[in-house]
Image (cartoon, rainbow, N blue to C red; front, side):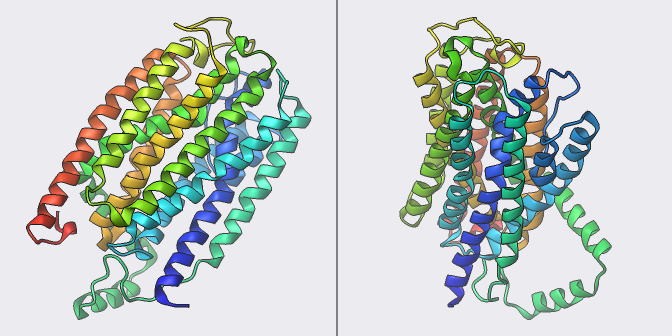
Length: 413
């Protein structure tokens, strides 16, 4: 297998592994609040990650729910930092855009499969029984474990042509010295690098964009499905519509990731047009959701809500908005992965650690206020962060393009 084929193989395996893991997790996130409400318990308010978190839903208890959320939240930071590093070392300046698109399309295929089962299995149900819950979450736990095993198939890429690799003897000596360090020293050094990176101009600007992706991630993965499931005017289909919503979010994500991956080779205009498309698509989605969904949908009781918004609640509009949410999210995330892998290619792990830290903090904040704010206020928060996040991304991309035009190295920003 040639070096380039090996790198592409690694990207595909990485994407498939994440697809299995997040078939479980994203399906879980999409139905979690609905399942928790069906438990008729006030002790559950939170979110977590991967196999342990998913398994907790088989027989949920407050202590196990919160404990799994904390420990798997920590594990998620390691997982996503490793993902960013793997994506970077298996890419070069010509393939980072393509590989980001391939990975994102495979990852978001996860939204399709799990939610397809939810749509058919929960069709016509207004309450989720204990048997339904256990069947779903046992299957999701097994699927997530399959994804974990697939990570062992990723091969170490050949040393040549890796994005950000410096072939000088100085760097080789540095690698020898680093190998002699103990793990604790390496961890401390990586933490210090992350702290220094946090205060650089480029990372501060990109953090605004990242913060927006955290807010809208919480909205489409947790809040929006809950809103759909709470609208009584959708009739007996309200619970199965949660699964259908997840399917169309996945279709939007897959379409966006595939399209931007294919077009990256011939993209003469940089990343800004894709991000601009993303924010316009999201603004359209937010406006339609504002018109279609009652304001009390996110905080409705177990019985749901009979309220209406400015138009009669439409299932077709709700599902179309799901597609727009997925398409817009793929625009932002594929371009963020691409620009981070390019700008910080020499030391990608701290950059992706900061990226995931900011995104996760904002996602957690959004989960907190989603239990208290009416829908239109949540949409307003995302509109504000989306606008400033887009402007800040444009600024970084313009500066990068100006440096390239002067003949300097892109990552010398």
